Length: 540
Ligand code: KIV
Ligand code: ZN
View (tube, rainbow, N blue to C red):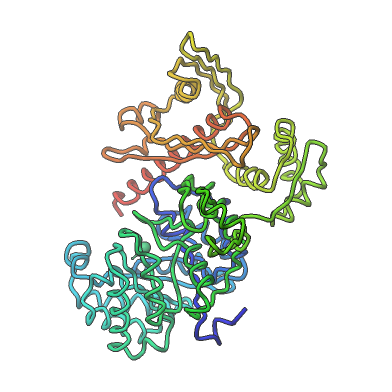
């Protein structure tokens, strides 16, 4: 592996799954989940982890701080608007990292300056100067982004960049915020910035491309070819709207075409598949089957002609080996006779250090699964471990449920739900189907008014006895209903959603657990929205 400091062709990978990615609707990761993703990103070998936006909420601050304290290797970065309070909050959150960074941003396009900031170009220059100078007083590594750069006048963008470099910015990131640029245009924009800003050659140039026109990865490559040596991207391409450049696509593009393109990254590509599964599972965002690199069909050959070719010679229809992205080759298999020691060892091989009470708990869940499934594979264990991370305190939990399902009568369910306060409440309902009956019984038991927005069922592995994986998104009801149910966080005009996922050998049990987790997340978010509104309207 080459050193990013010495190799001019080394491209730094800046992962923003936990910041831009987390801005995708319906995603709400708890601190343990964010930490697990950050550890996996470190295993994958990314250079910089943008761990969150610390000023956005106390929860995000705590998660960024925990990642800064516990994840070693990559630079840990916190995002901040160009406000001194945001910058101080970001500095406090990342300070404990071995390699902390603040990333501050400010729009340079007239569309944003006039309509969103309701400000002037002169003011933007002053704010950018003050923000970078303030960040540099607190942390040595500072990244600056002129937001909506590609719709900015290039001369003005260059002026602002020059100010940021003068004040000590160490990385200049050029975002195609709305995913509007074409590769050719983007490359020319960067070349022009180099011409206009001599100091740009002294810092790292970075690119941050959104995928609104499906060009995020192509634009990122054009950026690298124009001189950028940092690419911002997210696992599975998640992020605002159509998402960011997909991390795995950028890695495999540079790796597969290395002989022609000549760039290097520090990625351990065999960790890609596992990273993708972890992020998909914890965010509840499924990966489309034909998604490049990590879709389940990315290495499948359906037509007879293709199968025939691959059987004769793999390279006839394959440009990458599935093993290089970690899609094959893990042969961990446990069964119902495997003991605690074997489980601990298998988890360790997968990178999870589980001991004490956590091991006991994991072992009893493993036994439940092993009783139903003949073989428990690495994929099952991964699903089990990530499922454990979802248990956040305080949370709702399913104590037990009964469902009567028949084709001759409407299904009826009774559930007992443990509330965050530790009480157990019961409810019954007759629904359209067994899962619907369970969901409605949970709402009756908890008194929460919510609507089901998304419901997805998948399988962790193939086979009849595969673990079921369920993902649910709920939206809390009207303000009046919320007030009745003592949920003051749902304010007029606000729609609060929550997502939850669960795995179980029984699909109804997985559905019920995913549903109460989604409700719990929605309630926490409603409460946070309420607290923020109260704080914003409080008179000093
Ligand atoms: O898309 C964007 O412009 C951003 C900035 C904060 C870099 O995410
Ligand atoms: Zn972005």
